[in-house]
Length: 111
Image 1 (cartoon, helix red, strand yellow):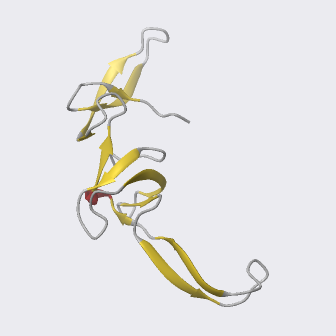
Image 2 (cartoon, rainbow, N blue to C red; image 1 turned 90 degrees about the vertical axis):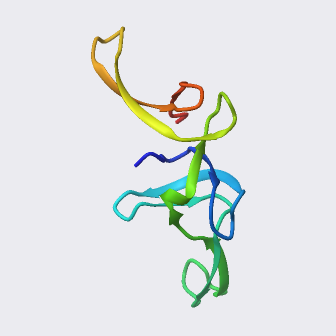
């Protein structure tokens, strides 16, 4: 899966087309992601210990990973993501990295 947690993405199809947000959670087995501020649904909940009031809760629902594109931090455009194996000079080990196919810049995890 080319989209990882904490990536900045833009929705490219569906009702929320054009919206941008940060990936909160990734479900690789179903190829879906939850994006912050995108695809809101309403859930009717019963009163419980966590929510004694109950009522209607609005939250983000998963969208298919094929409907989002990663925004490159360097060129600030949505782009396709590639992966390649490079050799780490410090440790001498091979490392798998993702890169932006527009500007060929490596996408590193912030966290």
